Length: 420
Image: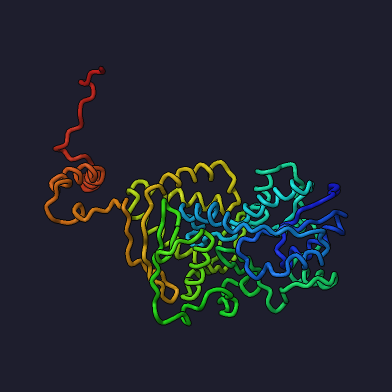
């Protein structure tokens, strides 16, 4: 299959092993100008020297955008409000970041009059889908170049050799060969020794959270305030979205909060093992869930739990821009209107324990729930409710016990009924 003629391509660039070798590879194989784009979504020190590294790799320019506020307010908080976790564990730090990166990659491509975009996702993973579905949703006319689906490089060892031949400096080594992704929400670890699911994750692999065993012996209490489902303050100090998450990350990491080790089902059909560190997100999910327990009625809360499963799949599968995800988000936004108040949590050696929650919109009423005399709830009403609610079970038990309809229960003669 012949390659399309590409004049200029915008590469989603992290400065890591894969994207570092992609720059010279694109120039060699497509004879095109390469513009590197990096979204600052909280990688921290990983951004140091990124511009110089990109130019040394052969890029014509490197564009870095600070997207931390947008990431927190328009992506992380809406996802957190949904309560979505993929396969009951993963808080989707990588999944939720890709549509934001790809969105701005398309914007940069249009501004720079590029005719193609490129990414460093492998042909076996989920990220290729997340990037490319966003490209399709926002600008389907852009060519997409996915080097991992084209080149001869088949492993990270091959990539390291390619980098060495082209004098490209990368941090990954054969001794420490984990594939990592870091942002404001989490750090993920894959590959290397983790490819054996029976192999325990080594402590020196973790680069953010303390070991729960080595965490402080004294617990810490944290109070988080919400306004219509959005966290706005920690311990009565108001913070911007990104600062609030950064603060909770520091507190949670100190206490060993948010470590997850799981074997997950990738969208492409295979299983993979990932280890994640999500300290601030874990705290936020717990705090938000506790406040919702006060403010949402039973039917809404239970239905929202069902919706969260689908929402998680949509995010994990790269369908952030899908009409269904956007429609579900409208429902979630409506449910969040009364979710205002605060939650107190105790953090201790990897655990998050709720201590209390309060809201002016609380549906909990002590005078309704107690066993004393009430004006709103008459306990005698419960008898009729139980009889009707349990009628199907009663009928089944009577039939099972007698094997047939009891003789004293005569079937009606339908021939005697007249139609209206």
